[in-house]
Image: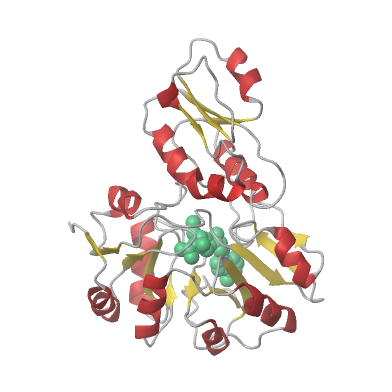
Length: 322
Ligand code: TXA
Ligand code: MG
């Protein structure tokens, strides 16, 4: 059994990654569980540590963003425009991979998901490596993504040698994934850290890929995901409170406080109504409520605009477990 070291020692992270070991890394979205994307050994270790099914492909991380072209057959004009405007940042492009990307990394898919993260520590790390990093979120498969080094340590600390600590994640929600279908229509595969409106300003209207539990080849998109262990109900908190008398309830709201619920069992993600702040705090808050030993988490829907759309997506998936 390993015990993960935690720190900011980039040289140590480089040393481990060069030896085909896995290391948790900070990004602006969530922490990733990283390994050499070109090494079958490192990639297999990622799947094993996460307990992730082999059909669910990994995102590749590069820095600087120009390095994307090293791993794909071609970069379509719209992808180039998105990369120019939004990278480095919480955007992942889904593009036809070239032969240098191992099939194991993409679970056999001809497409590779690729992004250039904005976190300075990880940028420095990537710039020191002569291979890209495959990195899914550093959580056990199906659980809430980690947004601090402590989150990673709590769940994967005995399975990995090192966690590069970059502080709390600035965006707090995973990257937005965009690809193109056969007739070059832009497709939204996952709502995320860049609001849909910002993407559409550059690409025009996106086709939205529906979630699926039966078609895992649709990226990201197993419905029951991001789920706390405690059942979560999404809807009007006020109505749900009336429907569940006698239960120990935790509350996750945007701005509101509920006087009948003890203060330590409720979290308003942004009393000031700032969706960015709410996104940044979302996963930490879910983990906190999940650890309280309560019966039920009641969460409300967020405004369907900006990052609110991605927050609602994560809450819906958290709720769909029950
Ligand atoms: O913000 C993020 O994207 C974070 C940080 C660590 O970069 N990463 C992340 O990775 O969220 P992960 O593996 O937890 O989620 C990536 C999703 C997966 O659900 C996977 O199904 C989808 O992207 N995906 C990756 N490669 C794909 C491919 N070639 N084709 C279809 N879907 C793909
Ligand atoms: Mg994930």
